[in-house]
Amino acid sequence: MYNSFRNFCERLLRIPHDPEPPPGDEASARMFRAAPQFYKYLLALWALKSLLALFVVAWITIAPVVGAITLTKHGHKAGLLLLLIPGVIGTVLVLLRVFALAMVRLDFDKRWYLVTDRSLRVREGIVAVREMTITFANIQNISISQGPIQRALGIADLRVDTAGGGAAHQGKHQGMNLHTAWFRGVNNANEVRELIQQRLRQFKDAGLGDHEDPITETSMASLSVSPDFMAALKALHTEATALRQTVARTPMG
Image (spheres, rainbow, N blue to C red):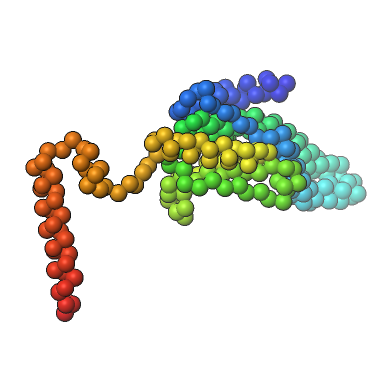
């Protein structure tokens, strides 16, 4: 029954097929999924929301029930019709919470975390599908967060920040931070972090990352440039140095 519901939702919501590996060597691709304990975590959240909804509905239906009892005591059998109000509301609530439960399972099944030797790709969501691809050249920070319930379940969230991720309001689109990718609900967060850090080091050692090596005369000499161009650069450097020294010696008025 769940498979039929899943296929129906995939067609209705146009959920994309399983993601392809991100750029890099496909042989190095590693796939990670949210742990089964994360599904229990989602179920716990669903149960809390259901209890809250039940409390709200019970509070709303008190008036119709009291009114029906009062009218019945006074011989007005039509007062029993007021009992239809809590009955209808209760039925709608049960249907909505059952549908939400199925969506929780679908949300769990549709989470993908892929890592290659050059980049990573994260996809989550079913109504609003979010997919991010991050190259190792842009990664600036990798951290792990874990709340009390997550510690009890043995899971954690792995956060990967890219350039610009520290800005408070930068890089956000429709409530999503486009500079942060999450591996949510994994039970091997340390393993995933070590894998990304290892491949990040290999990526930089291979010369594929960004380097800020200073330009020296030796490095310039290794370039294929004409002697006239080199002489012009040296003359420009001499004039700039002289101008800076002149400005430094000029007393401020």
